[in-house]
Image (cartoon, rainbow, N blue to C red; front, side, top):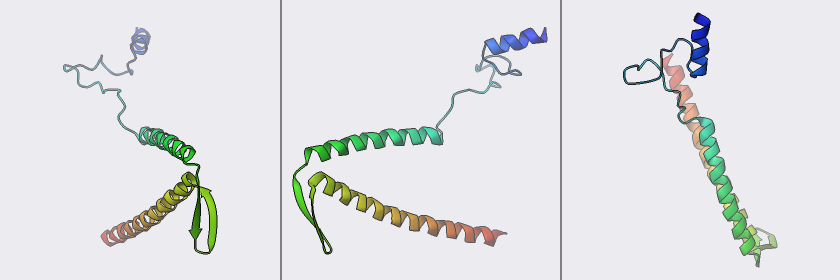
Length: 118
């Protein structure tokens, strides 16, 4: 008889030990709905990045005119879209350096507070 009960639970997608579907009268059964996770956040970031890259590709394709770029003692001719891409990349790297320094500063402060509490 117990085996039939387990088979019925499996057929109804219940975990053995639960006593029926989740209802206001039966709050002991947990909801199986999964909330936000790191992977779901990462997936959203990948989708946004793909959209941004598509727009960037369109921008580069629509701006093929050559421009002369001077940097220190280097002079080069690049497509305007590529030159703008390099400028944006340089800005992103600068922001990443500043963010890395701040993260390291916060980790050091947390470590100092952690050792002071013990």
